[in-house]
Image 1: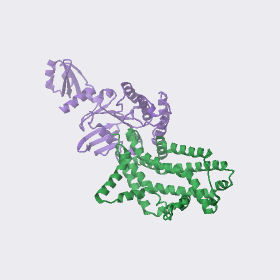
Image 2: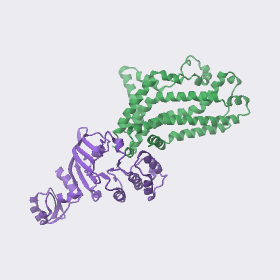
Image 3: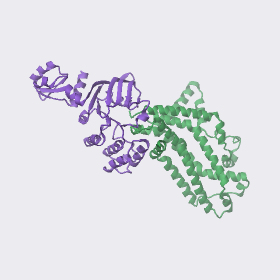
Length: 292
Length: 285
């Protein structure tokens, strides 16, 4: 029995935005690459050294893929809040529960879709988009020797760039796992308006803390859990640079990423433990639910 | 006879209210059992316990399993419909077939497709595009193609018009039911299913008011329709329920031989609906 693959397909049937939106964006990127107004100004100074060349190469290729991954930060929270809420809203929960699928399988399939299937699927899609769009641009800017030098296919640099993006994606997904599990829990639990219920506890918590103790520890903690720059190693060495270096800062950003260092951070593992506990609770809640 | 369901002192409270109060009953294989009671009597609570959807007190064995702890494996052999007209609205017909085929080992896809061919339902339609009657047909096609030993129906035809209600039950009895299978159905519309039941369990305020096979019903209960005068005489035999219809008195007796009552007027076996009303009013009085 291929229960889990079918449960995943079922999610993609119901929540078509998860794959339709990234496909549309990918199509737009490829189409945009064909239009003449896309222009590139590159000085010879930009590719003067291997470091500069690499930074610009990485910036160019991540510009093709990162917007898609940012889009997931909108699509996935929405999906997570909706997936267990929708089956109660449309009263179809008893239809699903009448089939021999356990609550654990159901809940885990939704988590798997949000934290693995969709992020990895979109990442693979961005690879194809990048190759297609770069190819089109290379043909179009064929006449410019500088651009030609820059757009020349460099397998090693490309794998390096995409490898860092993938590693960063894995770390971001693991870092956000407890938030994903929290949204799933609210989705299973909220009687109505899951969005409001998801926002309420942290907001009320912060308000009470502020009024009762005059402190903002909760807000700081949530800010810490929502920010990914630290965990990806962005901040190292970035402090102290002036705004004048912003351009250089942006182009060198990917080069300074140290996503693998996150695995040495205890907070990542504590977050995963919290996620596991929240998922366990979500399974318990769904077990007791019916259409009533 | 194989025992499909065995309930002993089954109990359940919701916030201090006894929804089920030490209920005991058995369901044998090859029967069509009606669990009948007014709204809020505890029918759905009993079904949820049987289906493993809610924890319970007392002893409950469904096909040799504890439904609460072994729900997943139980659902391979049990099928249930809460409301035939409710299916996920975004689901396409062919997706429904794909899904059930993948998760339910006892599903016979060609049987379901054969059933759907007799309808106007198209494979690419979404549930939201189907009429209520078509959703019912689709749901039935899926359920009837599952070789389940126990089928549990909870007010399955609620909100459907008469035509589809009749069609639903006819299909169920003609195309599905056989001596190997068992059907447990709850309803508060007794008249609708009384001709198909082999057993009835009346439930009221969390307690069993009556549990009998339909065959036994005829030997246990007699309905007498007599003139007011004759009825007064018959009253000595202690009818447990009495009502007036067009100037004649209708009395219900338990444990009386028909011969005893014949002399007062017309006798017959009461319908399940009449018996239900009598029992419920008797309890309430």
